[in-house]
Length: 498
Ligand code: BGP
Image (cartoon, protein in one colour):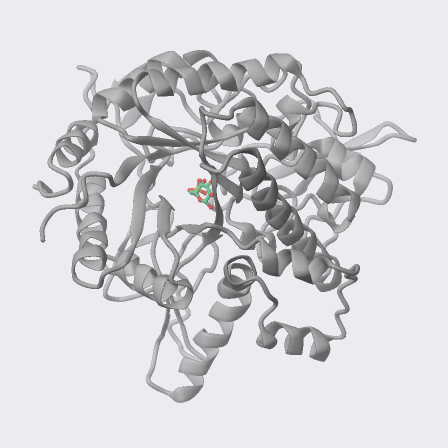
C-alpha cells in the first residue's frame, strides 16, 4: 500500500516558451511570449508593440485576470528595443537537450513533458510546407528520449501563440484558426508516429480566463470573444483527438486544466455556493466540455443571462460529443480560499490562476503560493469522481529562490518537503481512494523562466541553471539536493519519501 504501480510515469515538465530558447534559430517565427518582457510579482510583464503606419513603439502591461491586454489603436505585437525578453534564450534546451535529457535519465525519469512550438513548425501559418529544420529539432529530441526509454509527453500548445496568429487572424476568436491548428497537429503526429504516443492539446485551457495574450492571442478580450475562442479551441481539440486516433491507434490525447481546490472560508451556505459556482465557471466548464463532450447546462444558462451568443455551425456540437479526450491532465500547485463576507483581514494569497484569501493553515513561498499537503488528493478525487477517466498530474511544484553554493551544491529542503507531502497525498488517492492516475511530472524539472513573472529566480527545478533574471550566467547545470531525493524516490516506486 505504500508504493506506486511500477508502470507509473514519473518525470518532469517543461514548455518551449519558457525552456527552449533559440527564438530566432532554425527558421522559427516570433510568438507572443517572444515579445513579452521580464517582470516580477509586483511589476507586471509587458508586451511590446508597434503602430506600422507611424512607426511608433511602446509596451503595455500583460493582462491578467479581469484586466485584458489593451494595445493602442492600430498597434501590433513587436519587439521593442531597450527591454529584456526572457524567452529568447530561456534556459536553452535548444542547445542543451542532450545534456538535459541525460540528467533526466540519471534521475530515472520514465516520461518527460515538453511542448512543440507551433511557430517553429509553421513559421508561415497558412503554408502547406512545414519547416523541416523545426521538425528535425524535435525529432532529435524524441530520439534522444527514446534512447533512454523516456516516454515523451507532448503539449501541442503551451502559451506559444505565434505573433502572426494575432496580427493576421485576430487569435482564436477566428474560426479559420481551427483548421490551421489541426493541420499543425496532424503534421507532427504523422512525423513522430511511433516516437510519441502521449499528447496534450491546450496547456491549462482555462488560463484563457486569466491571461489571454499567450493563450488565445486575443487582445481587448470581452466575454463574447472569449466564449467564441473557447468553442474554437474545444473543436480543435476534438478534431485533434479524431486525427490522432486515425493516424495511430496507440495515440492517447489528454486535455489539460489549471486546477486548484477552492475552499469556502466559512460554513455559511452562501460561501459554499460561491466556491461551487466559481469552480464551475473557471475550471470545470473547460473539462466538462472536453471530457463529457457537451456544454454543461450551467454554462448555457450563464451565456443566456449575459447575452453571450456563441456562433456554432452545423455538426460542431456532434464533433465535441464524438471526440472527447482520452484522459485528463491537470496542473495543481495549491488551493484557494473564498468568502462572500466582508472581512477586515483582506490579505490575498498568491497562486497559479485564482488568487483567494490567505489560508492560515498553510505556509507560502516568497510569491505567496501556498503549500497545501492535501490539494492533490482532493483534486484527484474530485476529477476522477466526475469523469471516471485516467488522470495525469502534469504540473505541480514549488518556486524557490535557490542559491548556488561555492562548491556547486544547491540545498533545497523546502522543495523536498513539498514533494514529500504532495507525493504522499497522491499515493493515498491511488491506494486508499482507487483513483486511476497515469503519472506525475513535476513542473520545471530543469530551471526555466517563470510564466507569470518572467523571472529566473523563481526556480522549480531538480537541476539549477546558472542564469539570472537578465540572462547573465554560464548556463551550466548543477544538481540540487532534490535531484538525488527524486531519483531515490523513483527507484523505490514512491515508497521511500524520507
Ligand atoms: C502554469 C504554467 C506553466 C508554469 C507554471 C508555474 O500556469 O502552465 O507554464 O509556468 O504555471 O507558474 P510560474 O512560472 O508563473 O511560477
